[in-house]
Structure formats: C-alpha cells, structure tokens
Image (cartoon, rainbow, N blue to C red; front, side):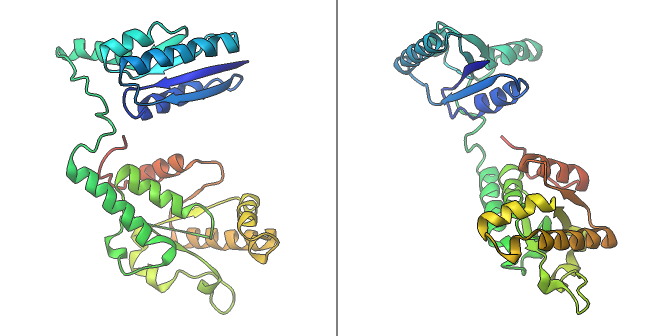
Length: 277
C-alpha cells in the first residue's frame, strides 16, 4: 500500500512534520510519500496547495493524509476543502484545552519555533559553540565548564550526540576520542590524564564492531583503521575501561541520536537548560 501525506503549516512546519512522522511511523506496511509544506500563510497559497492535493488524489487513486498546524481560520477553511483524511492538530488539541483552562489560546503563528526569550536562544547558541570548540579532544582546558564529556572510540557517535545535546537541551557537551595513544606499555587502555579530574562528568559510548567497521570504511576504505580486528580490539578495550572505572555507557548501534541523548539524560540526571521545541 502506498499513500501520500502532506504536513502543512503557516509557520515552519516542524511541529506538523514531527508529529506526523511519529504517527505514520507506526504503519510499517504502508509506503508513505511525505511532503512538507511550510509557510502556507496566505489564502492564495492555500488554494494553490488544495489544487496540488487534488491532483495527488487523482494520481494516486487514494485520498492523501493531511496533517496541519494552520492557525489562521480563513486558511484552515480553505485547506479543509481539500480531499483527504485530515488531522487538524490545533483544533484537535487546543479547543479541548481551551475548555479545560477556561480561556482562549493566543493562536500565534510560529510560537513554538520562534526565537522567543533572548536568554534561552543565546544559551542554545553558546552550547552549540561549546560543543564545536570542544569536539574530538581538540581543546581540553574548558572541561571544567562542561556538563558532560562523551568518550569512546573514533566514529561511535560522539560528535553528533554532543551537538544534539547542545541544540535541543542547551547541555554543554565536550567529547574526547580514546585511541591507541592512551594505551600503556602492555597495551592496556588507560584513562587519559586530562580526563581524570572530570571522571564524574564522563559518559561512554560504544558500538557494534561490524557497524563501526562499516562506518570507518566509508572514511578510510581498506585500512587498518576500519578492519574488523582493529574495531573489535578497540571496542573491547573501551568497554573494559568503562566497567573497571564504573563509567556509565550506552551502545549506540541501534539507537538514534535522539534516543542516545534522552537515555543519557535519564541515566545521569543531566540538567536541561531548556526543553526541545
């Protein structure tokens, strides 16, 4: 089965798309063609979009799924004329909330993803800059200001996780790669001296050796760096280090960045400077 889904908004479309994808992801047997239409903020744009939806229904032989967060009543009325199964997020949830709270909502376009409070927005920017400045062990003198320091082998997901923590939660995350340079003379992996004062801030990442080898092969094919033996040895050593020093860690193999980050926060109690939009 194949269907087309439209995520429509008079703002960025992020809310409609996020919720829509979450709902439609539950239907694995349906091949969904998803189309996001942001900034449908005039009646002319709405009428043009209705024509597109009508043409899609004719082409597919099935009515599209329409998920919208349209605020403007006139635009919503036009979109409602389009053929399709409609999920109007605002009318579905805001109207019952208005009754419960005994007040009308402000119905402001783009409120969720606007800059809003300057201090919150700037905190996000500073957190992202911190993650970039302290990526891959490039700098270590700011670790006293870090909320968390991610450690692990190269290419196990430290950098994207650090950036996600910064952007979504305002968490100042540094990351440090554990490499052969951190081994002692007998080949045992040791905690680098620069990390020892911050053991309470450390959180480890690990990954399946086959997955790691595949990722590294994209960067340096046919090298020792991406060989299975090398990957297995590195992972075994870091996991041994984690267990020996009681460093909390998570296997990133089957988790998305979002799942890694939220699980990390739940396990460590990291303080979110703000909630994600």
